[in-house]
Structure formats: C-alpha cells, structure tokens
Image 1 (cartoon, rainbow, N blue to C red):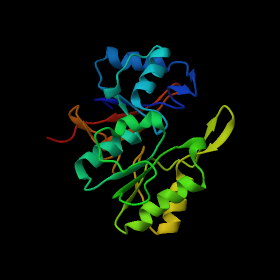
Image 2: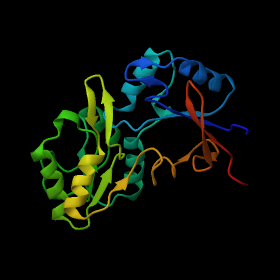
Image 3: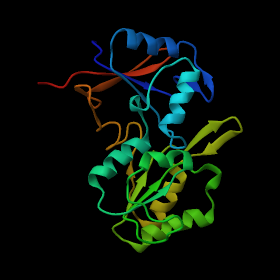
Length: 222
C-alpha cells in the first residue's frame, strides 16, 4: 500500500499521559523525512492546540497547531459553516480558545442557545452545571446537542475518570435529543473532514505497529 498521508493518534500512541512512547517520535520524524503530509489527531477536549503543541515539543516532536485535529476544532469548523444561532459551551477554559469568534451565550445563561456543546469539564461538572445544559436544551426544542466525542472514561494518574459520554447520555435521555458527535471515527467529524492535502480521510484504513498507529489515506479518484 502506498502512503499518501499519515494520521498519528496521540494519547496511547505518541504518549501515555506525560510519558512519551518509545519509537513514536522516530515514526513522526520518518514521515517528515519522507515528505508525507501528516496530522495529529486526538479525542481530548480538555486542552487547546497550543498546549498540545507544547507537549509534543517537550517530547522532541516539532509541530504546529495547524497539524493537530481535535473534536473542538472539528466542531468549531462545522459551527462556523452551519451554525444559525448562539452557542453554549461546556468545555474547560483551556479549550474555549478554539471557539473564538463564534456567537456565545453568556456564562450562566439558561436559554438562548441554538447549540449546546458538551466536552470534558472534569471536576467542574456538578448538578447545577449539568442541569443548566438541560435547561438550555429544554427551552428550545430545536436546540442541537453537540458531543465532543463519546468516550465513556479514561485513565488518569489518579485512576479511571468519567469522560464526555456519560454526561451526554444523561442529556440525551432527559431531552430525547440525539447528539451530533464530533470525535475520532465519528461522523461528521474526523471521518468526513476534508484535509487540504489532496486526499480524504474517508479513504483510509487503520494500520498498527508496536510504536504507533497510523491511518494511511489513498488519493481520491480523479
């Protein structure tokens, strides 16, 4: 199979938490030396791309924000194109910068949102916060519930922790509203997003090695 581009998953492939995985940096440098377009993809919604760039640089991997795709970036791309109303964000402060320029409802608002975006709030989740998201959706029957991934839990240095999916599931159950999901292997996010390299991520197959997992994408037919 001829490679025309490489998608590098990050957590669990490039690194585990703050520990680099042996061979991952070498794989990235190999792709760069071969002139292969490459992109880093991650389901994390707790950080913005500048923080992820800094993390990769500390591991000896030189990159830039334009080479990183997260659910926040994918959702923001979609909202900038499709949104017809204000957005309510339930994401950490470090990830809010990705949504700059979008019309946002005021913090604490319980009505007026056409889109309710749910990400990883970590310890900031509580009953009042989750209920505010519910009220925003309940107030407008046409408001769209947007999930930044549907990961159920993840491992931290303190142990397993709830991720986005349980909170989205609670809102879906309470409102009867199916979420629009942005995240790895979900439409209309990574799978449908056209990357400006002359090929499509939809024309891909997953490969695995001991050091990294990559997606090899073929050029679309002329």
